[in-house]
Length: 363
Ligand SMILES: *Cc1c(COP(=O)(O)O)cnc(C)c1O
Image (tube, rainbow, N blue to C red; front, side, top):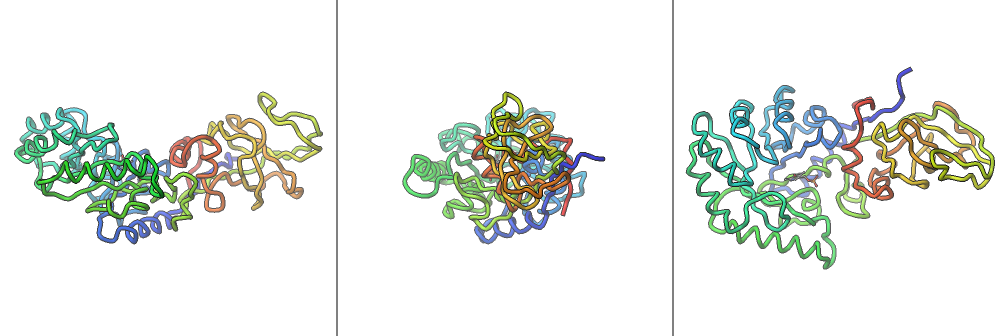
């Protein structure tokens, strides 16, 4: 029998979340960010479900290639930009737009005059200090791109927020986002062109920053980027259910220990379920005893260490549990954000980490 571990992708939830993004930012166009294999949900599947988006954002040319091979004709933007001059013919062939964040890219574009012009998204660093031109160098970069025969008219101006998930109250992150908005406005003063600032958290919490193009990623998958809040709190629907089945139910005596390093000691005689999923499938090994999990529709908890192929589950309170019962690790009934929080990470990392042996199914 095939391993019962599967990731069910809810394409209706993807469409719902896209509609939600549009409702939140009715005057903006939407770039659906589908990098990292659609945040682990499957690139082509996600892009087809989100074909109503105005553009797709990817992190690699090979992802752009896959989208074109799947027959998608929307604009595609290479969010980290191209790396070398040899990438430019491929950008042209695939009709891909590119972020330009470094002077070396400006130079390569200036030297690549032959062929169709390429649309550029010029990125200014407003304080995240990852990618982008320093504000004082932005105008020069813009002037050189505008003069380059290889660059299409209509350069888009963009930045990226570091802390837009902190939108309530007066926290350092909140102040940083306001500062980044001011920096952006000052840096682009005198330049014309569409503007793009907002990632998911800014779509949810910073309407002033919606501008011409929003760039939601996590939001489309129903995952909240905001600490302590689930996608559902924002009217979003989770796009993935990760599930498996019980492959053993064992009675274990009080005082016995369970799993690697014997981290769980049974406080009483109890039933323990063994589920066919582990960190080899992408479930986080860091999930401690007490992490929520659902067995046959009942809430219970992970106990002991998560191992590569298996995990052990507390079946006290579910005496009828039996081999073959469904086990849900996350999904609409159990937000991935809760698993992430107790595992010291974010929902994005969990969905991105599902491994190839998990069977993907679509609904
Ligand atoms: C990944 C990414 C996004 C999307 O971020 P989310 O938090 O998932 O919405 C937007 N813009 C850029 C430049 C990105 O790299």
